Length: 150
Image (tube, rainbow, N blue to C red; front, side):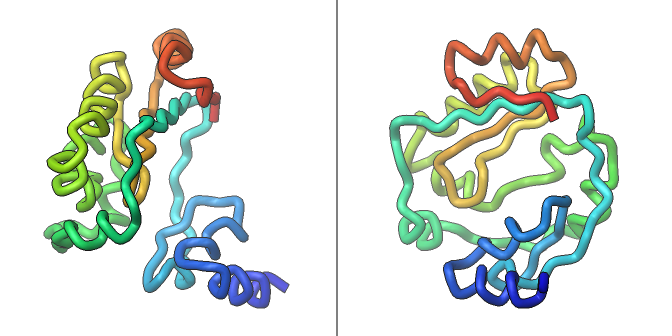
């Protein structure tokens, strides 16, 4: 059953229980406590860029300074995607971009290419951009082969 799969996934590593479900989830703890969230990205495009430069999980966690924003994440992601940039943030970015400027440049390049929202994925180093325009997303194929319609 799903509970057993989630428990088994948690034994494999942090954040892996998320992949048991094929729906958007807000995760807590090590990723094993999940709450469904209503986020509809149907019709959007995503481009994922994995820079040559990597970031170890150890390095990322050593540099992060987490903070609790005044508005809960569930409320911020309930807003239209066009309002996410600057509101839905990744606390790892500040220290990772400082130590690895090339990764920060990837995020800027996605935004300059027309991504409505861009962020580093987790502790890095992959960066993704959400596009509302398929032509702009497809133009990213020069930087990555990972361009998909959601």
